[in-house]
Image (cartoon, rainbow, N blue to C red; front, side, top):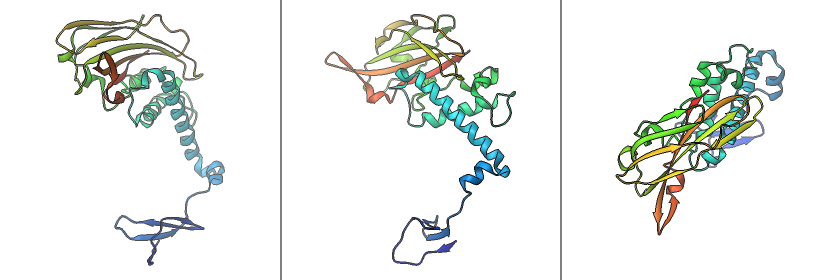
Length: 250
């Protein structure tokens, strides 16, 4: 590494030299380093690197499979970092696969264990609107039907209501997802929309049928806020305050 003494300050790579700005503001230059892709692919010394790379790719793909299975729910209830956050969770689930060798551990196998299910259960798809902070009332889940009930709800008291919201919608979803094949079946309850005031309500969210297929069963609860203007409800701030949580995994 050497300091660059020139009136022209540059950053980037030229031939075998890399120019960059150091932490203290000085412009530095070094020879282009790193290990060749061919060596990583074939050298026995990089076996662990190859294994880690394969498993990371599998974890990322598994997160993508789940996101695509619930695209309709996530459309207005996610944060910008949901993809890497979910990949990180999938990596933990993959680690729960204690039967496969390194480099071949699978999320689908990990989810057959209690540790794997615990790692996924409770995932919030919008970090800016965590369900436990948005909904202050208790709810119950019937796993056979996917029905979620929120009893004795007073919207103005039992929700953390964002400024400008006049109405709130509740939705439940029931998913069967096979992470080994990507096969999915999602059923979604009718939306329950209520005015945000002091009225006592009982919310019952029942999907039309249990989903078919194999794999894992996942249950979701979504809360979305709206502002009514001239009789029309508009999504509040493009869904920035909407919560979506995976509340149970079987």
